[in-house]
Image (cartoon, rainbow, N blue to C red; front, top):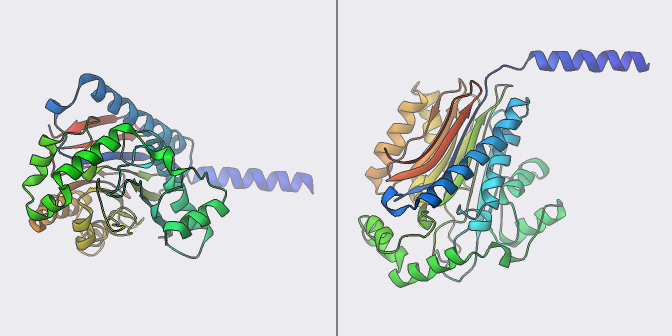
Length: 345
């Protein structure tokens, strides 16, 4: 019996490995907005480049070993949640009440299973909580105290809200309150650039656009997407953006592509931006580039919003369009090609 089981396990291992291809792709972003080289110190620029590189290495190591796209995007996003340079997890911005309220989502392109959490304040890694919602509950989205209770029951790390405090983000809230940024942004889109110039973030990340995300194609041919954010500086009334809303800021479908957005969330929600790109590909027979350019570069600004998006399709083609001054972004492919970019040009 032992010999039979051994032969069976060897057969399964060989069979499964035979299904693996050599191709894998990982794309990440760390937020978009008014990111200008003139506002960035050399040291800060190097810090962002190193952080993005580490996030790529974390996820791509999993893909290279034959791991899943889901594991890869979760690993990349978890790293960025733990890095205070980014507006997610430890580096999250503050609400008007002086709290850190976190949102995250993850989606499996093979099954269309998805999970998200919104408005959580004690979960160290919201992206892992989103995955737990997807895999260990019958639901897609959980919010607030309920999501925190569920995460604790699943054995995820719970922290005191003070864990998320960073001095730089706290200062950013005070500056935002002085400018009453939300009122200004609603009043006139042109104020976006003016606000960031008057009150530049010392980290180089404008809170309004601070989101992190990852999309991947694994060696099994499956896609996945993940997004995490601290939301908008000085946000009020329990505001939730596009990141945890499946089809708006996060979407993955093996028939089309995996996508993660970063930008003015209200407009991504109104456009159902990520799902619209997928539909344009599936039903309109557009390429990922054609569909993403249409939504991000045309329809998003036409409605009054802006931001960016990363995507990878089922064939491994990638896109990183944005209609802002910059977007922290990068990719790594199985052929060894890698690029890490920040500015528009």
